[in-house]
Amino acid sequence: MSGPVTVTVQLPSLLRSSAGGLSEVRVEASTLENLLESLFASYPLLRRHLVDEKGNLRPHVNLFLDDADVRWLDDWREPLEAGTSLTVLQAVSGG
Amino acid sequence: MVRICCDPQVSGLAFNSTKGGNEMSRVLLTVGTRKGAFFLWSDESRENWRLEGPHFKGWDVGPIQMDRRGDTAIWAGVSHFVYGAHLQTSKDLGETWKQIEHGPRYEDSSGHKLNRIWCIEPGPPEEPDLLYAGVDEAGLFVSSDQGEHWRGVDGLNDHPTRGEWSPGLGGLCLHRILIDQKNPNRMWVAISAVGVFRSENKGASWQACNQGAPIVAKGKEFEHIGSCVHSLVQAGNVPDLLYQQNHQGVLRSTDGANSWQRIETGLPARFGFPMELDPNDSNTLYTIPLESDEYRLPIEGKLAVFRSRDAGESWHAMTTGLPQGGFYSGVLRHSLAVDGLGPCGIYFGTTGGQLFYSRDGGEDWQSMPFTLPRIQSVSAFLLA
Image 1 (cartoon, rainbow over the protein chains, first blue to last red):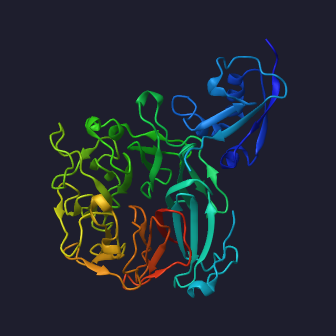
Image 2: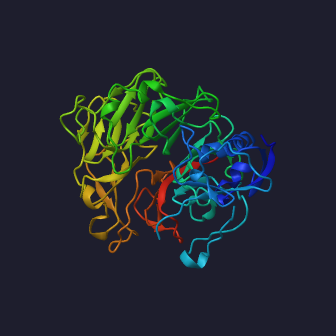
Image 3: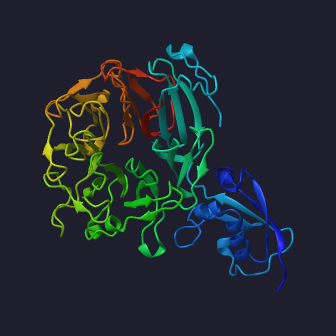
């Protein structure tokens, strides 16, 4: 199993107050699953906004691991590669 | 946060942009909107207003409450359709805000979901650490440590009638918490499309109190569940006297909500959302009727506040200065406020973002010289 890498997490403006006003934060993690837990441990207010009571991603929250929507990833325990970024986006629909 | 200085030429209102001005700012008007919160400051004359905001830009702001039992704290219920609902608090009148990490939240096992915070209410003065919050899906939460941690009030949230609680158009929301100022063990809550509940033991158990109030759906196991209370107010100095604007009429109780009677003489419609009571006169109250639950619009495009000075026995339209044609924005249940000064200041905001106010108990009205996002709450606070 690979060791932890530094992942850059980019946050939308509405969530920056939940991360000390930062637009991006760096998190050490070895897998996506581990990345989210580390992110929430460092910035617990983000947990409230990104996941629901059951711990599932909120329906209109999109997380992109580089270019991949994490909902389409089969295994959140795959090793992360160095230089990976995670982008938090809200789903947008309508005109 | 950006402070906005409105042009006094627009309305004749002498807005100013000086920061704080708190030495003279005795009246704070807070406005929760679909896209943030706005604060308006004035002195006791209420002639000059200073607008600041938006706080929580882009977030959906519902209730804003002030707790003055210890160090003054402002509380706000904030939500977003993507990022959920949470509480924010400020100890410096809105200069800085702190998001509450362990705010109201249902247990996973409850099967319920927190969609929105609808009301925040300080507990009785002798228990300054106690705070209550009402939420959608309908539930009551309490904090015993000045809002840092919250737990559900099981006696209400797991009420035996819960299976027959059904949402209205505004959701399944607990939107009002009242605490008897003379008996802190007694409290009431209002749940839209469900009804009024009362506790005599600080929330340990609850009784539905909708006898005489219209019930939307018949044929249920619990026949007094299903009253669509839109607003509930209590006369602080007469604890058994309550009023409500219901989906299907305007009602008064003189026995602590054991029974309700209609008080609609002079009203042009039974439907409406907000209701407020003059804090200095338990017989003077205000409501804003709308044309039926089907349309929910000012009647014939005319905006009117109705006032009763005889405990609801009769109602009279107060329209001087309000648009009397071509006005088609409604007023939501939390968007009417009174300030308790004499004469009483009255304020209301519309779904179109206009803010109107009267400095003389509703006799004359003015509009603020700006348009905000959809207004969801208006509150008025007096500061020493």
